Image (cartoon, rainbow, N blue to C red; front, side):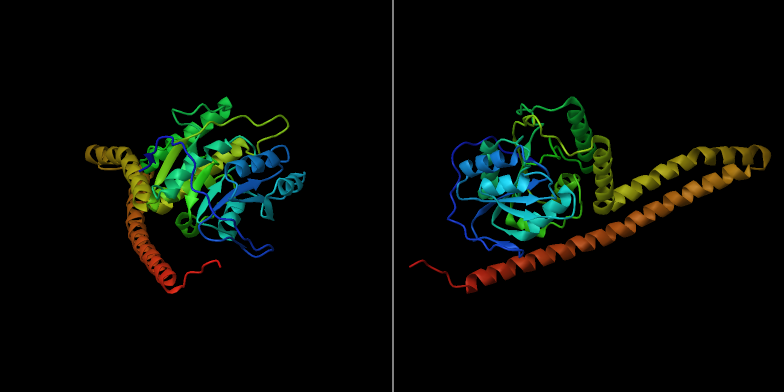
Length: 348
C-alpha cells in the first residue's frame, strides 16, 4: 500500500567525490553515491539546462544522460553541461531505462526526463525517504491534491483513466503512475526485472513494485509546460493502448487466479440465460434447440476451464514468489558476508 510522506525541507547528506570508469563497460561509481539518470531523445532545447539545474542542487552527484538515437544537438549540449553521455540504440524509453539500471552502479538513483518539465529543487524531497530507508521507490506525483501541475486537458484525462484502471485492479490508492521523476534505492534497481521497451515502463515499474512488496512513497511536485520548440514524444492513443495492455498483461501474470477466475465466472454467468432457455424447452416440449444447447455447454466448459487454469497458474506463481524470496535472502546474506570479510580501506 502506498504511503505518503509530507514535504520535507533541508539539505540531504552530501556524498564524496566520485570516480568513474569510462568506456563501453558498465559505469562504476564509488559506493555511497547518488546517480541522476536522464533519458533523452531529441531534447536539445532543454537537456543542457536540466543537467545544470541538477548539478546545482547536488554538486557531488553523478549525472548521466542516456541518449536514444537523437538526431539533434542533445549529446553535444549534454556533454557541454557536464554530464556523462551514454547511448542506447534500441529505440524506446523502456529500453533506455533498462540500460541505465543495468549499467550504472550507485546506492541511490534518480531518474528524470530531460524535457525540463520537472523541478530540480524537488530532488531533496524525493531523496529524503530513500536516504532514511523509509521507501524503496519515491514517485514525484504530478496529480497529487497538493500539486499545481500544468497539464494539457487530453493528457490529464488519459493519466486519470490509466490511474483508475490500475488502482481498481490492484486495489491501491496511488495518485500518479506515469510520472517520469522518481528516486530508488539500489535494491530496487538491481532486483526488478524490466521488459517494457516504450512509454509503458513507468506502469511496469509501479505494478511490479506493488506486487513485489516494495515500499512506495509519493511526493507532490509541480509539472510545468515544455519550452517553445520542445515537443512530447508520446503518441496519445497508441501509447495509451500499450499502457492499458501492459496493465492487463501484468494483472494476468501477477494475479492469475483473479484474472482467469473472474473470466471463468463471467462465462458461467453468460451460460445461465441459454441454459435456462434450454431447460425450459426440455420441460415443456421434451426437445431443445441444438444451437442454444451447444452455446450453453460451450460457455460453461470455457468458464470451468478458465477457473482451472487460474488455479494452476496461481499455484505456480506462489511457488515462483517463494523461490524469488529465498534468492533475495541468499543474496543479502552473501552481500553481508562479503562486507564483513572485505577489509576497510583508508586514505593516507
